[in-house]
Image (cartoon, rainbow, N blue to C red; front, side):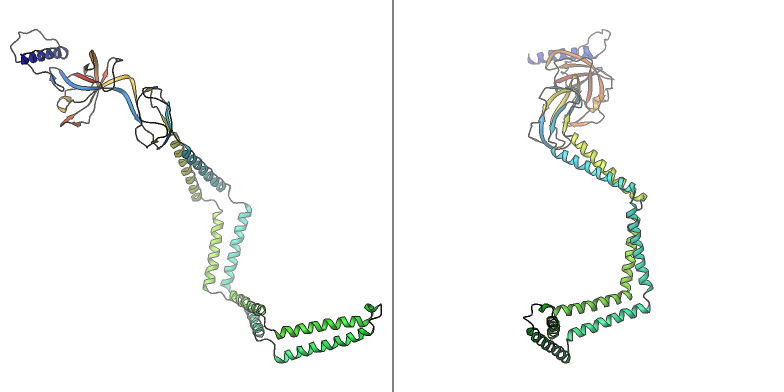
Length: 430
């Protein structure tokens, strides 16, 4: 009894399928046949391919932020309708704003350098650079030419005098010189005593300051002080500062003589100074290469500014088209990783169906534009028509079979359709 019921059910399904997929034929005399098996997905009947499918929106997008950051604003809710260009969420932009400001400053700096280059050097700068070249060149020429005999003789004489003075300072005064200085100091002291005695005789005179005795005492005192100081200086000779002064004089005289007789290193240094001065002068003259470098720097700075501005814009997640928020994985305060989907947007105004199990054996019998009839497991009694709008050229492996998804555009929409509803798809074969 059980197998009889199954056979009756199979005959019923087959008759319904053939009625929808086959063109009407002339009646013929029936002949006894074995009961057919029930239709399965991927089966082929006369003029018809049967496959499984799912409902999907004609347009959908998994949205993500191009840059990572902390979410500061979520402007939509699950199931909400949005318009194209509407801001859906935002990231914290404080760091991006700082980077944009820095990039803008770099553009201003590069532009200022190019402007300064275009203006060229001032007359004062050019004159100073030319003077440096002339001075360096004169020094180099003088070193090459060398000094004349008179200059060398004078420099050598000055060095000899300085060396003799240093030797005299180091040796100090002789015993005879000290004796003479001591005697001069003693004589000066005796003169003071004599003048003092004469002064004391007229001390009571009210006009003493006007008398010659007063003047004589003052002169004698001054002479004694000078003689005593000279003797003291000679007796304490040489002092450290006198030795240092004498040595410095020798060094200065030697340096002056050396400058008159330069060696190879001095000549090379003078030549290097000439080249440096000429290079500095050349830098003041605008060149095409220098201009190209500055212009390239400005382009790089502008590109950096545009990049920073673009990154700032990517901190706002916007809807690429009008649709419905189907999934929302985003909350304020969370970190959104770059490229990680956070919102699923779909245009639910137009549904389509995509097959899931049409194998390579059957897809070759399906062409774009072929008529399609659709029935829905979740909506009994609903049957829609459509046509094949696209056959994906790349096959995918599924449970050991290679399947080719086929997209079906509906001739009319039904408000009861939902994403991923299962569909029985009957496609008119070639």
